[in-house]
Length: 64
Image 1: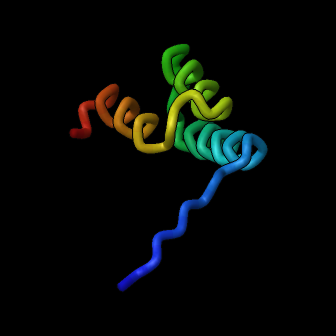
Image 2 (image 1 turned 30 degrees about the vertical axis):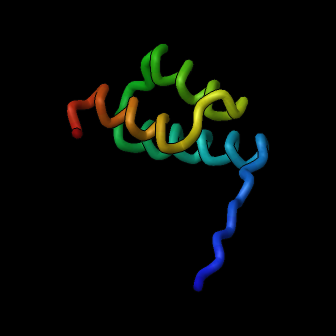
């Protein structure tokens, strides 16, 4: 018998995560497209979950 814990990520934490990801991308020479920016903003606002954000990103770069 196990327990399930649900963690809620705040808007501030989501924004921090996106900022770190953008910085890492810039350091690697990755261009952030308008579509990716829109997805990141949707993630920050909570309209898009991390699972969907990752799925869209992977699909964009053919990483299925």
